[in-house]
Amino acid sequence: MKEHTGKNKIFIVIIICLCAVIIAGLIYFMKLKGGSDSAFKPDLDSNAKTQTADDTGEKPTGIRIPGYPSITIEADKKDVQMNLMNPEGNPCYFTFEIVLNDTDETIYTSKMVEPGKAITEVTLEKALAAGEYPATIKITTASLTDERGKCRDDNHCTVTGGRTMKKRSIRTGILFALLTPVLLICAENPIYAATTQTAGSATVSYHVDPAYQVTIPVDTSMQFNETETSYGNIVVEQAQIEDGKCIQVSLLSDLNLKNSNNSKAVIPYQILAQDEAGSRPFTSAQYTKAGEETPLTIAIKKEDWKKAAAGEYADTVTFTISYVDKSE
Image (cartoon, rainbow, N blue to C red; front, side, top):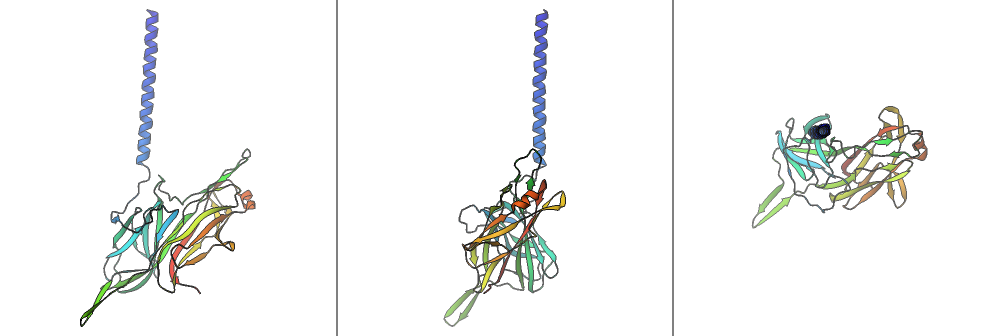
């Protein structure tokens, strides 16, 4: 009888343990579900439509940036047409902001646009009278894969220190700001094609606006004490430009990775352009045809690695892609 009672107790204990395991599993599952609900959810722009564009089918090694030398819109209207596109294959969402250069006034801000989609119907903050308005299109990116919604190129350099550490590693990345100057042409009656008739003949004319697409580097990593590593290439994928004009890509940065917990702790670095003559600090380059490219390298001196305090480091690089007169 005692033996039978003992077996019953063991059986009850096993059931209780199984119930505890099941309950713990359910709690864990609910936490995971709750975590996914609170994860980053992109605020997609409902006006963005699928865009059919020429594509090589190759996945870009960076971020493709479409060029906007000029945009012609209808004057005195808030609802206008333009093409704000996030090229197919990009690793990130685009958010567009249009700012008037003379007044620093933002006249349009989109929500997130997925790769392969474009906004063609835009509602401005205010209507613009007929005339020409120098402006800048600011493109903000957010990663498709990072659940926190941070841009894939919004990486932090992490230096791990400690007496027992014989090896330290650093994951380098640059937070990008993307600027594209544009000339807004506001016309009362925009005409993109015209037909002129004379006796017995007809002449059809069509104005082709300049267009281009440039790919910039997106992400890289370096091991501790590594003095140079490939940063990727600036590549002109498309170039439909006028004679005497060029695509200019400029880079602006103070070239210091900053420690997130100590503003005085920095790691100096350089971004170098590689060509047949060797390496040189990259500030800008001009391009006139598709296929031209500039390989870039990130360089950090060994003595600067040795001085680096433990912590996370980051820097911001601003790429400006402009349509300008070609330098002789």
